Image (cartoon, rainbow, N blue to C red; front, side, top):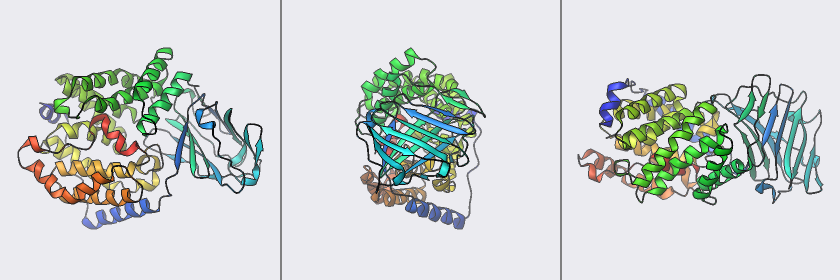
Length: 454
């Protein structure tokens, strides 16, 4: 039924066609960029009382007494440190204002932490940084400051000290205009819910039950908190794979179905509350699609398809992965939508490999998905294998195995096994017996861990 509903309502995209020489050059370029990307550093997220105020002439970012500030990293000499502002206006772009070196001699020890004294002659216009147990404050202004202009989907401040990157990510705004961007301070439960969410997804300290309790509380006390609505919806999707002993859309356990249903409302709200982020509608679309299939609701399923197509049109590179997470596991590899839409989208991702360098947060391992490259190659290899594309599947698996071997990837054994048995995997999909078809990696919200686990 799913395939009938989909193919009767959605136009099929033309397969992407490129010469072998062009494809080879793109692959080589992607490998080179990935190989030369800077080594992965430790990643720490600040959430407590975070807020930002940006104008054409200045920037102020503040964080409260976050748990991550209890153990400070001394930035004084000989330690190297830097600061970077970055933003996205629509979720399909990334504006990197560049790493601003912070000379170690400008740092000094103060009561409860460290102080950076800048000035007009400092790169990037960084005037002052207070980095203490009580909070973080960053001030930039003057001729060296690169303006942050809105409206935006999100703004980030990255403080790197030694081998650790500290991130302040701002996505909720009470003013979001060209002349000024002012973020909304999260509630305490929202801040701690975000901490628990990322502890779980990064596998630092998995605690999805606590994250669920905190985020539910956060949206009750502040229904306008779009970030918490989004994280709550995503957490429910993640928990669909936790709820069932074996995740399978065709034989979903009752608890998994309940988690999927619970994801719908907060993601619907997040779409309305985060209007500039083109990625959020993609997650909502995947949820609509999966719930339509699981509930045998053709109208909801059709709405999910329409939402998926609209999301992919708005942000092809990122939102294609929402179709990969739900449509690809559900449909047979021979389905017209799978062959005419899913597989061409995989080819599009391959042909967009230059984004490893130009969109590092989306396509490389430099954002909040520490193993984005490895997880992507694993998933896309599985999708091509299910579609009968042996050569392409082997290409993805081999590239992922090379990358994973150099990055301590916890799922490296999955890639190695697929490199060794790619032909058998494709043959199992093609033999006409659906009972022996290997599952695609993850599926639904379970796909997240292969990129986001540290």
